[in-house]
Length: 291
Image (cartoon, rainbow, N blue to C red):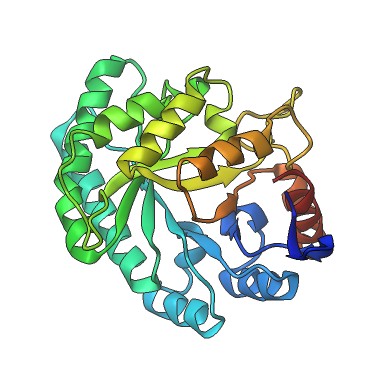
C-alpha cells in the first residue's frame, strides 16, 4: 500500500515514501547532484548510486554530497561479471570488484549489487562455478570493509552474456557456499531480488521465504514487465504499466523479514527523454499506487 494509518479513523491521504529509494540509472540524464536535489524535492530519502553517476565526482566527493543531503545509500551498482575464458580477465574483474567495494564503503552504501556475468559459448555450469569462485575471492574484502555483496538473479533472457544466475535458488546455492558474516552476524553474501527478473518463477514465494530465514534477502528492486517491449534492456515499464503483481511480491518479501528499501530501478530510453522532474513525479505516483 501507498498510505500510512495515523490514527483509529483509518488511512489518511499522506504519501508514504519512507521506504522508497531511487536508482540513479532511473533518472540517467541527471547528475548525482541533480538526482539528490530531485529526490529531496520529491520526499525520497534514499538513493542507490550507479558507478557511471559516481565517476564525475569520485567516491569521496559523492559521499560528501550524499551525507550533506541526509541520503541513505542502499547500494552501489554494480559489480560482478566474474566469468571469463582467460585468467587475466578474471583477475581484472576481481580488481574491479574490490574497487567497487572500496567506493561503496566511501559513499556509505550498504552493499554492492552483483550482476554476475556470463560468456557466450561458455557452459552455464562453468560460468556458475567461476561466479562462485569470484565472489569467494572478494568476500573477505567486503567483510573487512563493512559492505555486503548482493547477487542479483537476472531474467533467463540475459543468461547468454549477462548473468548465468537466473533464479533466486541459483543465487541462494552460491550464498550457502559463503561462510563470511558481518559484524551484525548476518551473511556478507546475499541476494537482491528485482521483480523484473524473478516475477515469472513459480518457486519465487518459497525462495523468498528461505532467503529471508537465512538472512540472505538484502535488496528489493521494482519496475514492471511490459508485454510489448522495444528493447529487453532499455524499455522497462513504470510500476503499473505491465503484468507484475508487485504488491504481492512485496508482501512476500516483507513476510520474509525484509525491512529495507523498495528501490525503483527503471531502464527506459523513452523515459530518459522526458523532463526528469516530471518523470520523477510519475514515479512517485506509480510507487504509491502499485508498490
